[in-house]
Image (cartoon, rainbow, N blue to C red):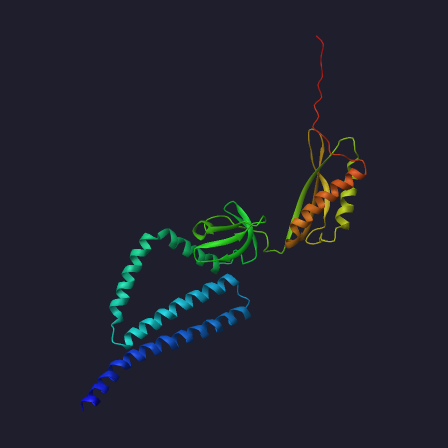
Length: 267
């Protein structure tokens, strides 16, 4: 009878612990499955990658907290006190980390209001580059020279953001100087030939053109403008800069230097 009683006591003691472990293990694998299903659903709906990661993190944290509280409740631990203590700790931490919380709020706003998406080329806070990710605290961009820049979301949300990729096309604006003693119509025609022969130059939303921009002190300033796809911007920029100047030089149109005419008047 004593053995039966001891076995019953041990079993009664072990059952809540076994139940708690089952809740933790089964709950964890259930969360893994839910996260996997959520990621697939978000990918099919073409949601931005940063938004998908953010949703996955939130779901992961919330569900695991719920599982831990359920496990504690299964062994008779009152979760009301834990929730109250957690709430008080959260208030204390929020007061001490108000700057970080502003970054979190900024990250949520950036993700919800799509000013830009992962992969877009933007400029903000004195930096320009492609967006790698939008996390809770920072937005990470990669500049054209390979630097990784982390911009706090709290700073970014309160600044002007220029998105160069949203429209899919960009305009290349160049300025060339030609001498006054050269027929400017010839220079314009030569520049137009270069624009016409460049396969990356687009005819929409506007036709490429070369026109007189300004009459400077020592030269006529020729504006060359052409539209191209956003990903080809720098290639077109450098190509046109080299090709237009080479075309002008081939036809005897050199870069004019600043000139100063001095008139000496005898008394």
